[in-house]
Length: 102
Image (cartoon, rainbow, N blue to C red; front, side):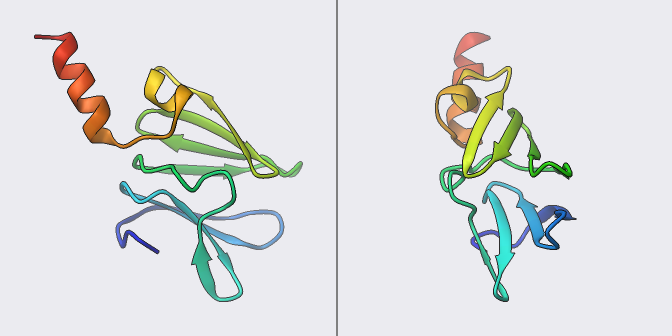
């Protein structure tokens, strides 16, 4: 894992362990190692919430909004245009918010 600050941990219905980190993205355990799930490689926002459904959907709560992840594809439901258009970290969003309120 690229980030040692884990904020959320959960098991999916296939028994895999998932970890959401502070600014390092989401990881899933495969063969004793933690790897980024396909389609979530660019996610760098803090991830304090993970929820798995029986039908294979993983809901990922980030500090920028909500992601629906299924079969390697993520759909953003986010108030932040940053998360809707491309996964990005807090520095970009922080600058945008500061510029808005100046």
